[in-house]
Image 1 (cartoon, rainbow, N blue to C red):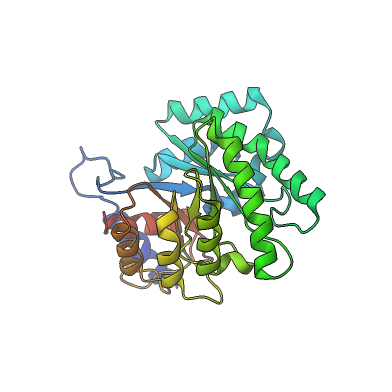
Image 2 (image 1 turned 30 degrees about the vertical axis):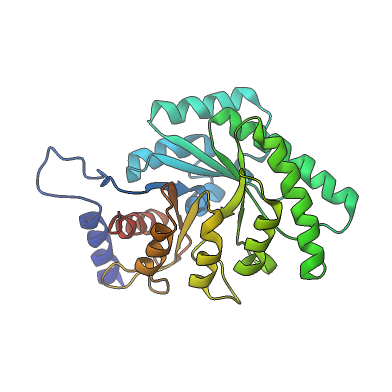
Length: 292
């Protein structure tokens, strides 16, 4: 295992652009048709342990990975959505490090597909503060979940109402409301794409995640969601000796993304356990850069 880890570590550095020329930035990213961002969940172990704080996430991302786009997770600053002192500091730290705040992933604010109308409306209201925070930070979107109880049609009906309402709220601040395939019925690409088609608003779209398809073909799911994509989540868990993701064909995935005409951020979301979070992030970045 140690020799394999060492090999993968070296492979990641080489693919990321390390050469013998000392004048070159070892993390210099190749320009291409998409930009790379980092989903904060990739560092959730560090964050939960307290080894890294949300406020330091932009600087850590820039200095350790040469990545200049960040995707926050709201649970790492759950009580700060309306704390303007904190948000100003976070915004300035990103700016000082040349980092673009891309989006905020929202969890734990209630079910947008709740069959209880009072609870559904409260969930919608709970998301408003995050739309405001995203606007202040300069993000383009918040990521929400399409979850609820009932039949597919029942959940669809509730989710459509919630998404339409949130999209209307976000429109003034030019914030998009984007839905990830994130378990349950939302991981069925045909269902989620139908939901987004029904909502029919320009600032309501998808965040296709390469890995979050459990009872549905992952490649078909990404194909279903790409017409509505306003972000892409490059999930990774483990790598083979050639630096390829062991279960996801990145070449096939990135072709689906490119063929859809997408040109935005592709966010790294490493969730593996065989490598450290930093190593997994570097290898995922190296893998993505093959397709730029």
